[in-house]
Image 1 (cartoon, one colour):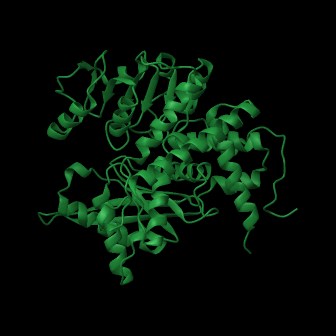
Image 2 (cartoon, helix red, strand yellow):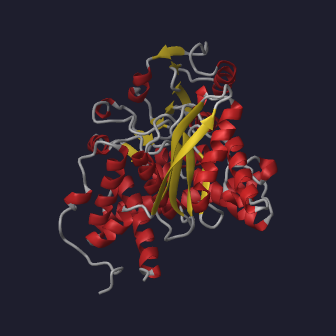
Image 3 (cartoon, rainbow, N blue to C red):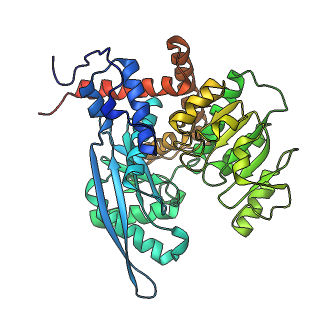
Length: 433
């Protein structure tokens, strides 16, 4: 038997790779370990799938506008390359850590495999507070970080994209820095670019559209139909803002929305367009007159049909999961539900649509952008949206079908499908030398 063959095992989950879930990385490893056990893979293959292929940690020095110097820490983790080049976002946040990036890169691997996108998973970030930097300072940080990770990125190696704290302007700086080093323009090195630099129509709202496609299928799956369906959205940024808008357009009454500064509630439904204008004017939800002030923590515990956590990791925990009253939870963020909270919600009959399915719309349209860039031929927005809807619908059918035939939760079914596809690719390629 070769090193890459699957050797079925009947042993319990390996204790060395199944820590007591206490962090985002622990949660990611726990989910993988459960899938390994269900699939019957041996510990050797488990180790291969659990271990990042490549990690780079770099110092990112910045010369501030006033002449001061400061050094930030940046990371790029490539979890898997078995199914293609690595793919994943770059985030700017004070909370960026190597373990967080490792977990997010692993989830990207499963997300790409589940949606049948020919990428492996990657993630990166710099530990900084974007709001404390001027625009020229942000550009200098971005260009220096790009130059530091330049040896391991590229359109056929690793393709970054926007994430928390980054946007299409940051992607334009990254593309330009890489292109200058290459001596010619390389639009395919990043996705999420501005349209006039090779970005794709529909990319900015793709994650949100994917969330809503899946949310509507999940509500139907749970038997929740009619015109009185309600939703609460935690987060009003890249994902939550458009998700709230698309839900309202689909006839869902969005009764509560929050951001990091505050939350607002209106039993009759919020005017999402007016709320968006208010946030654009003021920088946050507080002060919006179209609803009542709601304590931030209370949003997750509202009596609604649908809850969309679309902000950051680990917001639904063992402490508040018993009080979550939503019948369906669709994870717009990465890792918003801890392992213990997931168990509690399952015991209470709450349908949880996992992040690797729910928020995969962004990577799907990133893939479309990459394809268009390689062809130098750009699609109409309608074409992008139709292809996105088809991919999300197919993945939903795959996951629910697997859950039904194997008697699994949606999360376990999604993980098993994704892990199996990555394992198959690894085994077909073999181990070198």
